[in-house]
Image 1: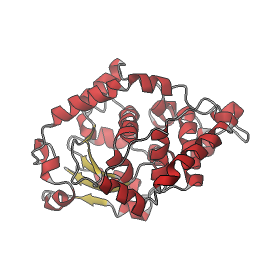
Image 2: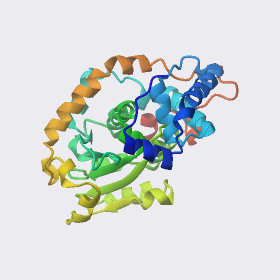
Image 3: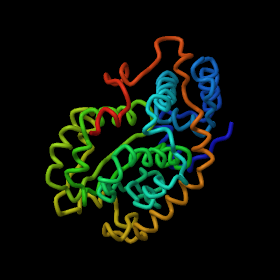
Length: 310
């Protein structure tokens, strides 16, 4: 078994909140590997131990839920090519999106066992040039790197700062009910991501309608974790203190450009991994029961983009 050792505080959190038992980790990982080997439609899948422990922790060591989420992840890699294909970091279009810095995990955490904080800036992109799904593709690439590398993200969860500056009607209009439903499905059903709090600033006109649409598809406990701010951000700094934020947000931990440069380089360093992942997905023709499609998963047929974009 090849996995990183947690720091003491994160290990305590994993044991208390995720029901992790160190002596059981090797057998749990092996159980998931053996189960994957027995699935006819998942024969191309060969995850690392570090990847599997992220799924185990994200599902609080329920083997059945871990199997379900793993299976759904590799299924969606097949039936949602808009998000999970064409992820070469050196592709010129992806390079452009990386330079925008739409999704930026911060360098530091509030404490050794605190959540990973991230900044999401949808307004940093030109909606006439970059579609929401293209932005989400790159966001999921970074999230997958966090699942592999960042123990705070995996064990403690994620705090998100949504900066809505520059978000206009063109971006909000892309957030249709169909896309909202599907993207939330990806996060909830396919990836072991635990969002602990979300903080929304620089709220634009028209945001309320998109926000209400989002709330229609999420559980009450998720709704309660959203905090909207008008001008006074003092309460936000209780969760996201200034010493972990870049200077553009009243902090003193570097600049946005430094974060953009870091994550562009980090994603590029994973090029071989993303190219290899293109082949690690379900083969729906070999699924023992009825093949999964966008129709039987989401109630719609065809690709996300063809359905939702004029």
